[in-house]
Length: 460
Image 1: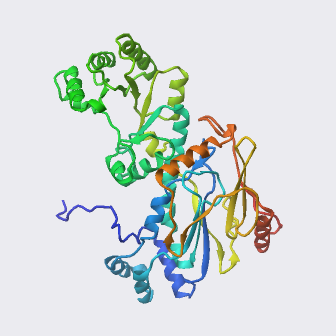
Image 2: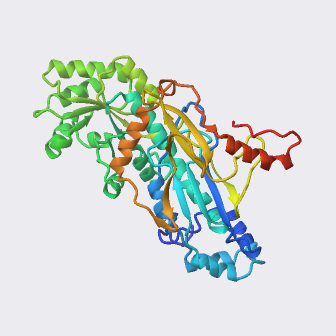
């Protein structure tokens, strides 16, 4: 066994510069060595294709991403360690002095958090000196991909729950403590009512909620004694976990308490049958105001089936399926160079074609208020509709961002604007942006030298 102290993988909050891939640093060193580091560059971040089973995404994570983007820096110790890596043996020492002074001083445009978005349309545009814009690729993808996955999953669960209360119970199932904070922050704007995560509540202001563990019940000789002790100490948070031994008896014990408890929680078994039996017992014993709370590896599909079957469940706690987004745990989110030193840049790899030049997305709505079309244009091109990308960082200075409640309101309105064919947990319709003729023409021109037959890139 090692005598060394345990190593924490939590990064230094004031020295997040190394939160990147090695090839970003080697490219940055290459740009500096070739006098290219200050060339004005534009990169765009987008989702190449939606995961199977998704008809839309909810863009999330921007506030935290931008806050930390502007704090990216290398500590002297980090620079000293990197300079000793063999891969940098041929690099001029001045590069490492340059790293020590490095701060993001570019511009960023982004779709507002809580916006419903689709594949192939720019979500973030970064304009900065080439080396700086390259540096932040890994950080932005890592900061935005996971929250967007969770917010998108949360929105689907909210839709399935049909107005019933929802709480994030995923802190113990998230891929790491930091991820649990990101998940709680992403789920709340998408429509969740609170979180069990105390740190997320303290740090972000999300309402905190919780019940009890089976170990509390097991710690007492009698289940009824455990319930009575908890209700006496926490009268305003008296939700009783009733399935430690026998669910029906647990409901009876909880229902016998006076004053009445707030809720009973079902965490296992046939939730449809158990919730019906619990409701019947509680109603028959003058406990109609006691709510029924359900949990236990639930997702939007199970919730939809339970409610379609008439389950009298008032609220749900969602853990694993929310914070892992198990059916679609990763996004094909990418960050690509589209313009350098005033000239468009294109990628023609099979299945990974990109459109050149800085772009904007305009959204139009039909007479019914539903999303009708998203059009991707050149950034200086006029078009109908609402421009989605907003200027959020100017010269390394953060613009005011909406408060969390405002993000929540926007997300609600955005979800209400979805066309019917994109709603519902079983929806399979696809929605793709339209690319303006000007965008296609620029792509066509840049592609000519590389193609035998002249044609515009396939929009898929």
